Length: 186
Figure 1 (cartoon, rainbow, N blue to C red):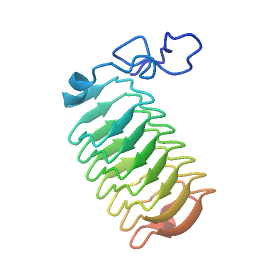
Figure 2: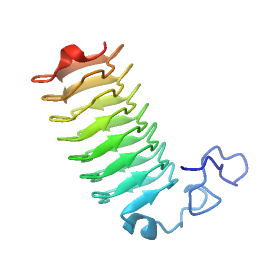
Figure 3: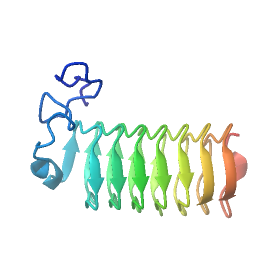
């Protein structure tokens, strides 16, 4: 599991990466190539990472920390993400199609124009997130929580939303067509 080791820079509140005693801001020259080329990212710590146009598809991301990171045009297609923390991240035009996502924290994150087509997203926390112009069609959202989230112009069509928590959400043009929405909470 990832470490909560703080950056060694004086008064820096960020977490150190798994490669250094410093965060990416105080040691931006950290070489991520070997980490990103591996099919397994286990206990990786890359908070405050700026990730643009990377291909992270077909990877296994286990017990890793990516909080406060930015992901633009990143592919997570067919990726397995387990027990990882992506809290307060920004995801723009990312692809999570046919992925397995379980026990993951996306709380407080923003998703814009992302797709999660035919994915298994169970027991995952999207609480307080902003989800705009996204498509989750055909996904299993069993026991995931979207409480206090803002959902705009988003499709959750033909999804399993059994026991998914949608309490206190703001919904604008959210489609649950063909989903079992009567079995969700909220």
